[in-house]
Structure formats: C-alpha cells, structure tokens
Length: 170
Ligand SMILES: [Zn+2]
Image 1 (spheres, rainbow, N blue to C red):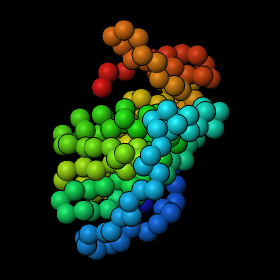
Image 2: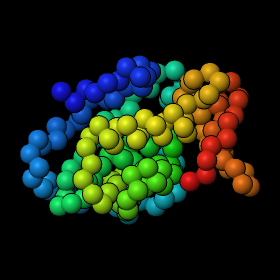
Image 3: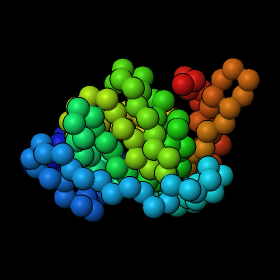
C-alpha cells in the first residue's frame, strides 16, 4: 500500500523496511541509542566511499518513522544520508527548510526529530527531491558524486564524468 508513485524516477528505489512501523498512531517506544558516544569524525569515516554507489541505480533505506506525541521521528535518517554519501547535517538543513519546521538530529547522527506530524510519503518525497538536487550528476545521471564547498558556492562533483554543478547553499 505504501508503494507510492515511483514512476517519476525508476532509478531510485526504496529498500525494504527492516521493521514494519506500527499502523496505529500510538506512541512508539524508541530505545535510546547505545552508540551515542561516537565522535563526529568517527561517523564521518563511516560514510561509505562513493564506489559503493557507482551505478546509475540506487537503493536507499526506506525511512522508518515513528510518532512521539506531536513529533515525527525518522529513525534511520543517518543511514539514509550515508547511503547517498551525504552528511546527515546537510540533509537535516534541507529537511528543515522544506518542511518549515524545527528538525533536530540526534546525538547518534542517525535519528531526526521533526516538530509536527508528517506522512511517510511526504518524507520520502523530500528525500527524493534532496537526491535530485544534491546527489544526482546532472550530466551523466549517476549517483557517484561528492559535495565540495568553495567560498560562496557549493558543488556536486561527479566522480564518474568529472562534471560539476553548483547547488544552493543550505
Ligand atoms: Zn557524472
């Protein structure tokens, strides 16, 4: 039922849900992360190198959402960011702007808490838009890109065809 219209981009696929989110709107208990003491540098080093997404197809983890009162939590946000070789913090900035609501990244750099209730499709759409803007190479359409900052601008640089395009700075 949740498989929404993916027809707009067949190269971008959602992975299978690892845990089925509860259907009811009850509050879901979330275990506290045990790896909260990882340093940022450590987490940065855990970002997969671009070779892992060398193809023109990508499978990203389906966002796992839970409701905590009036908040929505994306439990695997960091995992999603790493799967596309981007920093969770950068993606957080984008989500914050797009949703126009406070969004805070957890100490584990994996879960993101949003103020407000948001639907699965809405979150998936924002992540897709982010990928279109900040990940896909505009020239060869591959996902083999990294981001580079220069004085005032930020670029998406493709490791496959070496082209680069500037993106809005978040
Ligand atoms: Zn390219």
